[in-house]
Length: 123
Image (cartoon, rainbow, N blue to C red):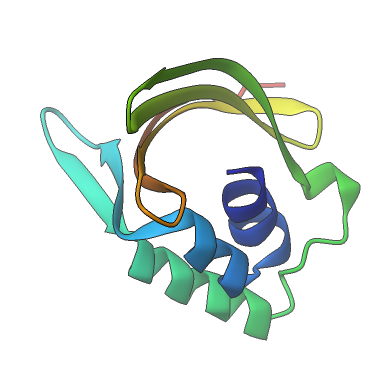
């Protein structure tokens, strides 16, 4: 998860790491206005990552923009797992993520994510 999610997707833009850790059916699910939800499949997230690589936004070079995580809880039952983690951009706590994983024959794969985004503080 560290390799695929933090390094591959967030800091490096390493598509091989992303493919190794994410299931092709992965969806990021968010909440919009009212009762609306939205989803972002991994293939769309990878396209965004490719664009950031082309634009020079990845790999990240500024330490204040580097992503790190702190694992708060890992709950595993058989071939299913849920991970709760704090997501930091630089030193700023930005999200709490809830990642769902399944164990397949080859390895664990991230299959979905929901999250809470902390409001931006007004200075």
